[in-house]
Amino acid sequence: MNPEMLSRLQFAFTITFHYIYPPISIGLGLMLVVMGIIYIRTGNSLWRRMSFFWVKVYALVFAVGIATGVVLEFEFGTNWADYSRFVGNIFGSLLAAEGVFAFFLEGGFLGLMLFGGRRLGPRMWLLATFLVAFGAHFSAVWIIMANSWMQTPDGYTVVMTDTGARAVMTSFAEVMFTPSFLSRIGHVLVGAWMVGSSLLLSVSAWYMLKKQHVEVAKKTFKIAIPVFFVFSIIQVALFGSESAAIVAEYQPSKLAAMEGLWDTQDNAPMTLLGWIDKESGKTRGLKVPSVLSILVGGSPDTEVVGLNDIDSELWPPLRLTFQTYRFMIIWGSLFIPIGFLGVFFFWRGRIMETRWLLWLFVLSIFLTEAVTAAGWAVTEIGRQPWIVYGLMKTAEGVSPTLSTGEVVASMSMFIILYIALLTLFIYLLNGKIQHGPDPLVEDKPISALPDTFREIFGRPRAS
Image (cartoon, rainbow, N blue to C red; front, top):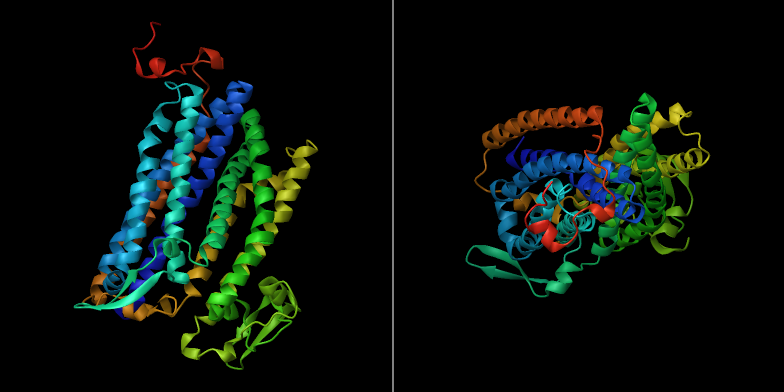
């Protein structure tokens, strides 16, 4: 393999591993805010106990997410120097904004959230938790802005310099709000909320199966299952169709590969299950007539561009894009009935007796993470051969002095380190789950907890 292909594989491996953690941080942060609000409204110390437990999990996820995320920024310079040089004025600005405005906000209040549970008043602790969660969401906004610009570039001009062509920003607003940004940020955040809620469902279902911490498990399940169910519907019904329309307009080759559509046509079908026969130029399988046209334009008469009307050199990897997309939509759609069953059996008070469903929810965190990874794979593989769609090809962005041996050595190191890191993460997470929520040292009512600036930052009370 040449350095370009190896660099692609290395970046795909490192970013896929990294993206296990940000959706958990975003989704779990939302659930921690919900727990804090319920505790303040009810004064029930059980919610406070739950919050302490899940904050520890959040800290572990945050630490591994940061460790694996920093690597990606270095890879832009080591493996993709020509890309970084070409888009640095735009892409670099967005990454810098993410660090200044989002990461420091999240990291700045993280200590208060982690160690202030028994020192801050419940409202101040909730504020710290909210700011950490907001920082995680805000970080995602900037990252999706940067990636959306690569998908649908806007607000730039290409200028010639002594070192070659460069993309220079002409409108910060247009760069921020490229045509694909709003649908993609909604898609990503809803997916992250589903991942976070599925983690709560997975752990609480495990406790109910083992009949451990049952009261905590039921409360956790009670707040997580409506989030999971409602957002699974929103993801499919709203952002699925909206994303299809954006992709059809700005990345027709990606949509044609996703659906295996060869001929430009109206009443375009959607393939539920099947395979691409590239040699004969056919897609075989189970198809539903007109559904793709309806998703794209809201009408069966909407014309969708096929692969035969696109230069074959600009096709993405067809089979990989097609099958990865099938995996995403099939499992993503199945989350709706799974969520409905969870709501139904919990509402009927029979969730403890339905062991097969509890086992399904134990697995839900792995399924949501897999679907999320598949969604990103479709996004990035389907963009090929472009690294910036219609502007710069991936082969043009690789570092010119990079050697095959250097990439092999670094990739081997990453594989070894990341396997070790994943093993450590699973070991520590499993230890926290097996241990479960600690009993509260004190069950003071809300009114007895410190809540004013003087009580929080002044001298401690005499015991």
